[in-house]
Image (cartoon, one colour):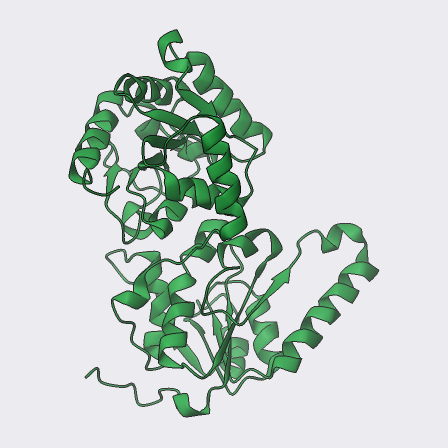
Length: 374
């Protein structure tokens, strides 16, 4: 039995909970265990979430979620009157839910507004720094959880610390990431694979890009890896976001492929929704990519993952709850520096110098370890 904090939340009084995660796609997915844990601890309660509209697919099919509220960041581009109207509509919808508990998982200042306007009986967020107006936050929130000190802690566990603070301790099962593609996405992906004569679990997904270019491995090196896998008999599914920068990364990879490998490489870049990307990843034998949201999707659907890390910290962001290999250079004691490239120059030498043979060794090792997973 875990000792309860003296000011733990009386769970019998909680009928509705709002979880907020106003961050990027991967961050939202890494908050999915919070929803699972709350539903297990509060089976009769309704668990809602508030995220940005573009990240909604990461939680939309979560079985423990009652309602998903969204903030569209394009509101502000439609004029002040439209933005204010949409904001008012959102807050009316939130107030009608009459939340007993607010779990605010980010540093976003909107949490202060939510706690003040919604007036939940209980509200938990992270400890604020002295420069973040702690007096205002102390008035609005009832509970604060500390961020890790010293050694890093995986982001999943840091999110769950919000619940530990109020007396809810996750089980092992609660900690799993949850992202379900849904039947329509699975059906479309299965049709696309059949059209290309790609057998499920006989292809490797390579996702070379990231919205952050300083997290990327050179395209010619990723092409060398793809060629080796093609020589080993695997089909290769290349994925990427429908953005110009990621298109350029993929084009560089495809252009560097030797001719014999090209017939086994299939380009899905910009052709898939997030739920379809999730479905494709669930059919893959292995995922290879950089620290990115698709890497976390692979973990959520149980696909073994080889993840290349540069300036970001793999202790905080590595693939969670799935067989994986992290490949990072041991030759740069400065990593993880968390900077956007060396000297802020958008190029991370700890990644650009990462040798192909080290990544191939990790891929071969993981494929052998997971040979029985089909």
